[in-house]
Length: 339
Ligand SMILES: NC(=O)C1=CN([C@@H]2O[C@H](COP(=O)(O)OP(=O)(O)OC[C@H]3O[C@@H](n4cnc5c(N)ncnc54)[C@H](OP(=O)(O)O)[C@@H]3O)[C@@H](O)[C@H]2O)C=CC1
Ligand SMILES: O=C(CO)COP(=O)(O)O
Image 1: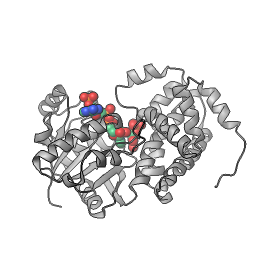
Image 2: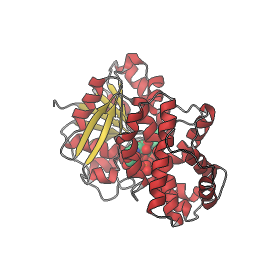
Image 3: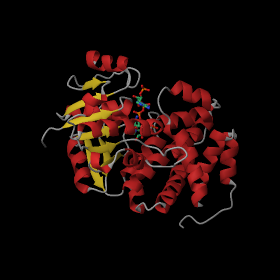
Image 4: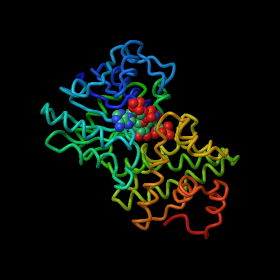
């Protein structure tokens, strides 16, 4: 494939590693961060100690705090900012694009739902960046811990877009011997799968922190997937997406791995650590904490049953004891597995 000019916005663990994959693939990549010290560290030492300790990035990867310089001329802008900051960064990006007249494909790898509006990341991007200043929006999602991608663990993800050509563009930019990208046209399913698996991952960590075993984890993952699919389908997702990479794939990796910040947060909660301390000490985003609130409220509004999400909501936001929440889940009226 022809080498492209790409801007990656957000230099946390995921943004920086995705930028590195693109640089390894020979593309011209500018990585934007708001933090000048981090930019200097990336450019001078090719490291990013706060977010990915002991990893050396491609020397060709260039970091900058100047969004105009990063984005101008880019054919693709990949936004990898936590959900909480996505609207603000998208707004800033829209102003840069309006001034430059460029119309890049916009991709994102953010996993969450916005507080209060319950919007998905692609909806936020579409609202903030007028269609006149961009091409289609593509979601990059799937089972992919930054730490594993950095060491070239074999990884498969989904590029979802309503515009197949744009999904295929992302597929071509990223795919290599260790990183394989599939396309999908179901943006809604890909984004609901990505956001909601973090809630179940917190639950899986909590179970392990409390000393539960394999059966408990398998039950949580399976019934978790049932409620993820239920909410996604209520909003028009294709049910098949939930048995794909951005559904069960991502759920499995995050609910079974110590690399997952959501799992680690749940584990610490299960061991009795207060949420405030867990958040403070993680130093990286735990998207599931915020998505739990948004998903709980959204499910109530739409009358969709999400008992696991509700249990985790009560633990995170109503101080319910984790063990009590699990007992309550197990003592609900028994029901049929398939609706
Ligand atoms: N880590 C992973 O393995 C994966 C993460 N994801 C998803 O990717 C998204 C980003 O995660 P990740 O990179 O891990 O997060 P991190 O917490 O590692 O990093 C977040 C980055 O975003 C920047 N940022 C946050 N808010 C703003 C803002 N308002 N303006 C400018 N920059 C901002 C931070 O800058 P600063 O340092 O200045 O605060 C930091 O560079 C999340 O939605 C996550 O769920 C998806 C797949 C894998
Ligand atoms: O989404 C991820 C892996 O696919 C990352 O999950 P965590 O945010 O829990 O680390």
